[in-house]
Amino acid sequence: MSRPKYSQVILIVLILVGLTVLSACVGSYPLSLEDIGQILTGKAADTMEERIFWQLRLPRVVMGLMSGMVLSLSGAIYQTIFCNPLASPDLTGVASGASLGAACAIVIGTGGAIQIMLGAFAAGMISVVFVLMLVRFSRFRQMGSYILAGIIVSSVADAGLMCLKTAADPERELAAIEFWTMGSLSAITAGKLFPNLLVMVIPFVLLLLFHRQAVMLSLGDEHARSMGLNPSLWRGIFLTLSTLMIAGMVSLTGVIAFVGLIAPHIAFKIHKRRDRGFFWLSSAIGGMLMLIADMLCRSLLNGAELPLSVLTVILAVPVLILLLRGKKGGVYGPTA
Amino acid sequence: MDPLLELCGLTIGYKQPLLKDISFSLMPGEMLGILGRNGCGKTTLLRSIAGGMHRISGEVRIQNTDCFRLSPKERARKIAVLPQQTSIMEGITAREILAMGRYAYGNAFLTHADNSRLEQAAAVFGIEDKLDTDCARLSQGQRQLVLLAETLVQDSPVLLLDEPNTALDYDNVYTMFDSLRRLVNREKKGALLVLHNPEDALRWCDRLLLLQNGRQVGILRVKDADASTVQSALRQIYPSINVWTDSRYGEFRCNTGKL
Picture (cartoon, rainbow over the protein chains, first blue to last red):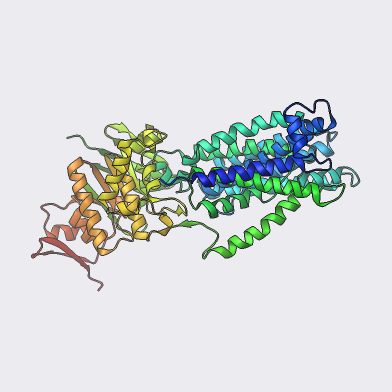
């Protein structure tokens, strides 16, 4: 079995570390490498730089990195288990559900940060429960059933979101909903990050460990079952774990478009295999994309921030066009 | 000798039965072919034994164990299946496909014994030089050989093969059947094969299960049968078939009276 070359692994780790450090420096209050060195060695105790670094900048960078990795790993898993290059974490309606939950917190509740976070997380999880219930209700539990159930739940959540937008106060609530659905890392603080980090890290590690089962599911239910895998059980496990980490992420950042779709494609272009290395590389590329997008969001406008999804879409479109052009017969797909 | 696989009055379906009252047994060292027209339920029968269909009544026993009570891993250790259609995504090598055959044995990593079994299975179908090739770059016939080798890696006493000669060239059809025949004889496995070509079925199988419209219309023992017995049995499903014995090779030959 071929393994990724050490030089490639080292290069990817170096790029990730470099982007992480750069991202920690960039912002409305710039920090130099020297500042960060002094903060990390404890020489800048009780300074403004230290408070910004530990309370705002580091949580934001960690969340950016982690959300990119989480979205991309989910995308890679979904594209594999549904054998569909267009599958992405939105497939199960988690993003639409979370948006509805956040909008409920804004319109019906007081719109406080904790309320939005809890509303988004709960509604994201409820959406996947509905998806699994709909699949259970269908007689044939096949790949298409999950996709169709996801579309149904997403559509219902989107309809609910539209109703809430209609009822929302245009000056305050509607703007808050719109801002939330475009995604941002600007509100991340140390206090908000750490509980959610746990919700993201545990499923993330488990999903990486289960890559073999994901690849087996890509052969189809009948074949996977014949090799000893319970397809319904494992697809449920994958959906639940990825929804858990996506809901944990979305509840803090809002909806972030396209990263989960394109990062696995870039990873496959580089690695050309669908083994453990592919899932690691997808995660790393997702993290890189998100750090780059967040840095651009913070630095393109003076005194203001662009929504994250604007940048992720701008980054994604050329990549998708290149992928579309790159190969005869589609980006990549199954061979019968 | 106890049968490896035994079906007793198996009826499969949901509100309407798709297969009715199927009963037969598969003995060690036996190749049992399933013949029938399109849509008669051949693939459904294999799927139901593999646990992918809803049972209305009847029993499926594998080595005296109720098949429907087995967990997926236990079932995979007893039955290996070659499905009619499998889609393989780009980026998966033949070696990875074969390695999946060891999943039912629970090891997270392949042992030395697993690897040697994998190499042996590849050698049976002549694909040892393709092991590290992406399956998407193999021809359809080569992919079929990879999937056949995977069923051997599973090391199960019962093999369910749905149209195993699909997409194989003339030479590979012979090699595949010959290798399978030797393996079944040597390791006392039982193979249940869905086939379309009656000549292949008569040449390689010990018995033939004849299906029509979801019902079993007979079981034909090929050995010691003469051409007229075979012809009258096969005419239950192919009314215009003619069967005769090729005296030079001592094999049955078939054509259809429609020609």
